[in-house]
Amino acid sequence: MSTGKINTLKNLMFKAVIVRCSEDQISVETEDGWSLHIYNVVTLSGMEVIEPSDGTLLRLVFDDYVQDETTLSLKFRGGGLITIDMSDNGYSGPEAMQLNGPDGSIVIWN
Image (cartoon, rainbow, N blue to C red):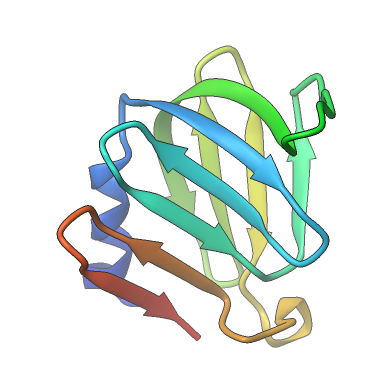
């Protein structure tokens, strides 16, 4: 994983986020216009999943991220964790992840 790409996740840190789930992705969105769309295989842990009609899972505070060779973990205040399989086996397309900024910027992991 590129260090430059991973550093763009700092734009989400320490912000309240909304986590949404649909059939083909999980999205992590901030009120100030950042959105991370995750298409790869993920594991949710330490979170009580709720499923209202709008697809919102939780309102959380994004605290940190940790990466290794095959995974990226997004850590949330209170112990919630989204672990993303960044290996070839975890890929489901169209890309691994996409980060959209409020200024129209886009960062893609593939």
